[in-house]
Length: 188
Image (cartoon, rainbow, N blue to C red; front, side):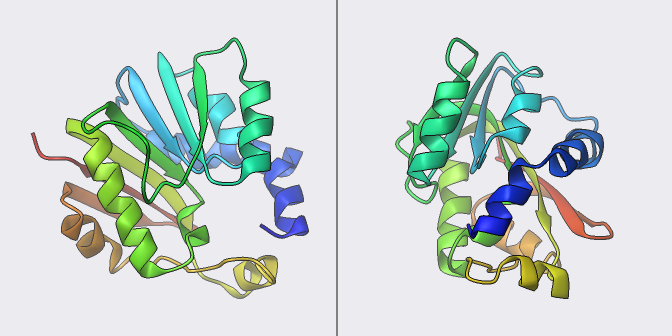
């Protein structure tokens, strides 16, 4: 992420947005289970909220500095932070009750790698496990924020087919003003 984007993702304004809008919208009416995977937590503002809602949370972060900072911050908590690539996760098959991803899929550098990530999330979920999240819609402001940064927007109209190709069912995608949310389930 570029410097402005890193600052924004740690800001009090984004923290408030995460707590008041993003996570309540994404998690509304969903039971995550006891062992949850967070894909791409960045600085961990979403992790702070999630860890209070679940028994065990594993966060996989590709950026070494962000992973180290979050690992240090989450010491002596119910969160394990793993530095790694979510397109090839170092986890066993069928390990997690749920997986979540918040405003990070557009940082995966190609649609092929995004699809690989979706397949690997499917692999590490238990049968019946849910994958849910939120991502940003493409806009002029989004492109400006990502100057010098990776931006591969997800088309919410095509996302259900991509999730289905990865093996998911019971797929729901809902578009809001600046973002969309999704839920999908690994078949039993």
